[in-house]
Image (cartoon, rainbow, N blue to C red):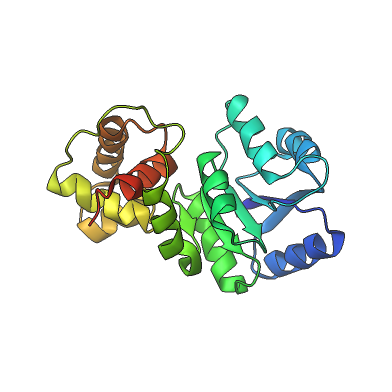
Length: 214
C-alpha cells in the first residue's frame, strides 16, 4: 500500500483528501500545515509520496521543495493545488516536484497520479501541459541542467524520452516497448547523461525547452 503525507494549510481540505484516499486504499501516514511541519513529518513517517499544496503561510510549497533538494531527500512530491499559473508550475517542477495536479481532479485521477509517482514516474495535469510547453520553450534553460549542448539521442532513447514526458514509469515503458525493465533503466540513465539533467523531471523540462521532441 502506498504511504502518503498530506501537506496543506486548510484542515478541512486535508481531512477531505484523507477520507477520499482512505476509500481508495491509499494510506495517509501524516499531515502537515506548512513546509516546516512537512519536513519534520517526512523524517518521522518516511512516506512514499508527498501531496503538497503551494500557497501556505510561513513556509510554502516552493520553499519545501527547495529544502528537500538541499537536504538530498529524493522523495516523489505531487503538487496538488488550485493555482495553475505557468510561473508556479515551472517553479515547482524546477524545484523538484515530479507531478502537478489541480484540486478539481477526480479521485481516480488522484490515486493514479500517486501510484505513478510512487513507481518512479512523473505526471502533469493535461489541462496545463500545452501552456507549460510554450512557457518552457520561451524561457531560460531549466534549472539543474548543465549549460552544455545536449548530445544526440538514439531513436530508442527518443522513444523512451517521449514516454517519460507522458508520465510513464520504467515498468510501463518496458511493457509498451517490449523491453526488460533493466534495459529501460539503462536508457533513462543515458538520457539523463546526454541531456545534462540531474533527474527525470529535469530531463523532461530540457527536452521540452530545447524542442528535442517534435
